[in-house]
Image 1: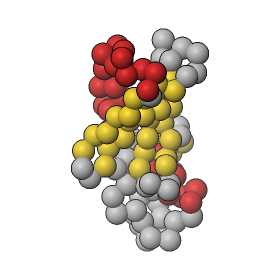
Image 2: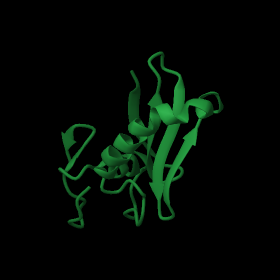
Image 3: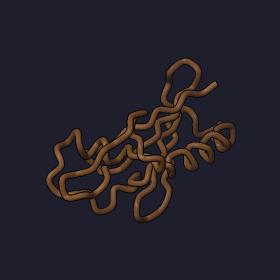
Image 4: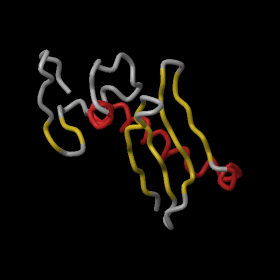
Length: 109
């Protein structure tokens, strides 16, 4: 069984999904940017990449729910924490399981 963690990579300004195997070994990293989808398989998992293809398709679908996952046009003046929350904003208006408010200029977080 695999585990998937999503996080806002503020240095690269994108949301990233990390896929782990059942014993918490990182097996793949998935993200999308303005050039398309990217998947990095860890060297020890490349021979069995077909085994995680289903997970990667599901991860892409789940990652797409983060409306700012590609990190395009981030709001000006956010703190690093604010950028992380902005990257994690889902299509239902929540981030990390909590409803998000609005910026002072009226843009939703």
